[in-house]
Length: 227
Image 1 (cartoon, one colour):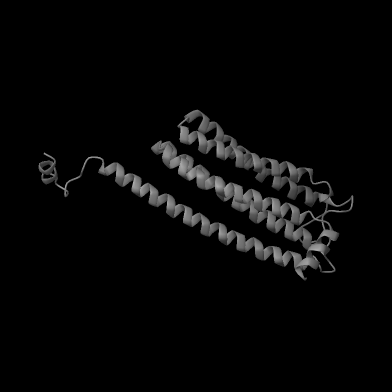
Image 2: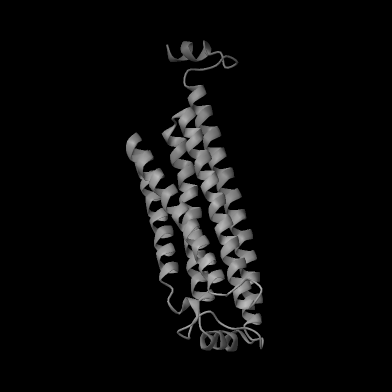
C-alpha cells in the first residue's frame, strides 16, 4: 500500500501543506534579510557617531571650546531634564520588549497597550530633546556661539532623527499587523525594532556622558587618546 500511495503522488500539483511550508520559508527569508539590513544600518550609524566623537574630542582641546557643565552657571551642571529624557527612552525600550512578548502570546489588547506606550515614551523623548534645545537658546547657548553648543545640537539632533525614523518603522509595523493580523510576523518585526531601540538607548547614554562632561574630563580623555 505504501508503494502504491507513493506511485500515485503527483509532484507537479500543489501538495497538502505545501503552501504553509512555502509561507514559512518566505517568512524566514524575509526575517533574515531584515536582520542583515538592520545589522548593516547599525554598523553605518556606529561609524558615523565614532567619527563625530573623534572630531569632537579633538575640538575640545581648542582655545575657544567651553564645556557645558562643571561650573554652576553652565546649563548641564544640572542635567535633570536630560535624565528625564533618558528615562523616557529606557521605558520605550522596555515596553517594546513587552509588546513583542505579548505578540508571541497573541494577546491583542496587551500588544496594543504596550505599543502605544512605546510610541508615547519615544515621542516624549523627542519632545524633551527639543525642550532642551529651547532651554539652551533661552540661556544664550546658541548653536554658533561655542563649539560645544554646536556639537550638542548636531549629535543630539542626529540621534533624535534616528529615533524618529524608528518611530516611523514601528508605525508601519503596526499598519501591516492591522491588515494581516499575523502575530508571527509582528513578533519578528518587533524583535528587530527592540534591537534598534536598545541600540539607540546605549548610543544616547554614550552621547549623554560625552556632551555633558566638564573640562577636566575632556582633558583626561584627550590625554588617554593622545590628542
